[in-house]
Length: 459
Image 1 (tube, rainbow, N blue to C red):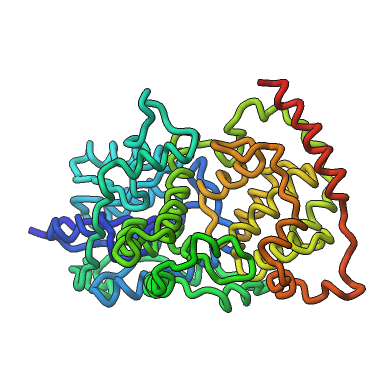
Image 2: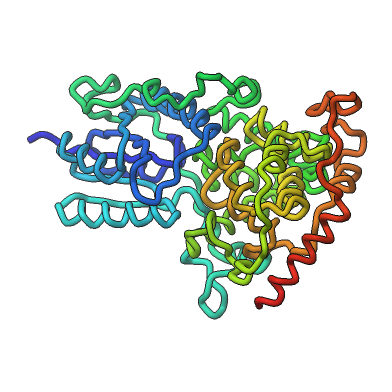
C-alpha cells in the first residue's frame, strides 16, 4: 500500500530548526511534502511590499537549499492558499497536513476553514505555536480581558511558564519523490514569481546590507550575543552606534524562532541588564501580535476609538513625498528615510522620530506612513508595523501620549551628537543643495496639540 505523505505548509517560518510542524511530520514517519504558497488572492490577505518580496525570494531560496540537503524538495505554488493546499492534498494522496500558526484575522479564518474541511475528509491536521513565545489567548488580565498596557502584559508573561526549548533541526528527511522531487508534485520556479525588482533594480542597498536565510540569521544572533549584551541597555537608542540586534527581519520571516532567541540570550547573558532589556524588546514584539490577535484591523482602524475624531487636514502630497524621499529639510528625519530607502530598514529610534514628524509636524494620517513602511521595510509584518505607528500617533494600545511630540533636533543632539548617523546618509547636508525645512517645528507642534483637543473632547 502506498504511504500517505505528510504535507508541511511553510508560511512565515522559513527555517528547518525549531519547526514544530516539520518535527511532527518527521514523527509521523511518512514521506514529507514541503510547500510554500504565495497567496495574493485570498480575501483579506495584504499583498507584500517591494522590500518584503525581495527578502522572501532569497529566504525561500535558502530554505529550499536547506531542505534539499536533508532530502526534501520545496514545492512552490501560487494562488489562494486554501485551494492550493487542497489541490496538493489530492495530488499526493496526503494523510496529514501540518503548519505553524498565524495570528492575523484573515489568516486565521483561512486556516480554520481549511483545518475543518480537511479534518472532515479524514486527514490528520495539526497546527503549532512557533512564532510567539506565548499564545495570545493564554496571557490575560486578572479579569480575563486582553492587556492594553505593555508593562503588566510583560510581567504576566514573565510569570507564566517558561517558553519551551527549541526543537533541533532534522539532519535527514524522507522526501516524497526524493530530494529532487522526481515523481513528486510539480511546483513553480521561484524566478517566475518576479519577486525581485528589475525595472529598475533598486535593491542594491538591500543586497549590500543583508544576507537572508536561516544560517545567516544564526550567525547574526551569535554575533549579537558575543559580548554578553554589555552596553545594549544604554546604547540601543544611539543612532551613531551599531548596538541593536538587527534580528527583526529574521523573526519576521521566521528564519529564527523567538524560542531560539529567548534561550540563546538566557544561556549567554542570563541576569544581565542587557539581556533583560533585549528580552523586553522581544516582549514588545509579542505584545504587538497579541494586540493584533484581538484587534485584527490594526493597520486600518484606530485602536482607540476616540481618535476617530482627530481632524486630519487635507493631505498635501508634496509634503508626503518630501518625507518619503528624505527631502524635508529636517536632517535626522531625512537621514532616517534615506536609510530606509537604501537598506530596507531603519533604526528603531529613527522610526519613532520620523513617524512623529509625519503625524504630528506634518499632520498626515498615520496610515499613510504605515503603508510606506509596509512597502519599504524588509521586516514589515502585520502586527509590529501598524502597532508602532499607532503607538507614535497616540491612537494605539499603550500609546505614547499625543502631547509627546519628538523634537527631531533635540533627538539628533541626544542620540547622534557628532552627526555620524546624519552625515552618513546626508552627505549634502552642508552644501547649498540641502533644502530648508518644509515646516516650522514649533508652530506645527502647537497645531498638533490644538487638533488633539478634539480627541480629548470625544472621550
